[in-house]
Image (cartoon, rainbow, N blue to C red; front, side):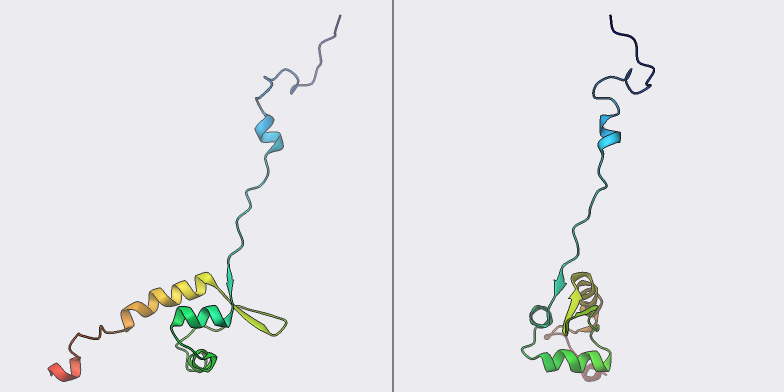
Length: 101
């Protein structure tokens, strides 16, 4: 005859508590890092010189990481730059404020 265990977990149902004891932390996917080539495409320019000039004058965000002389931007950095830059550009067919005055 089997003796009863005094372990409190032994009395629990087979699936009860199993998820809690074996749960793994939820890992988030690392954010994409973009190279100068990808950033130039997102910016719509063909020359890295344009990017570096805009970084110097403050109109474009600097790289977030430098790994072995390669500069990387986080995709969220470029996305937030695009979101903030949308309102700064006038549509091509909109009349200019200087012309309407």
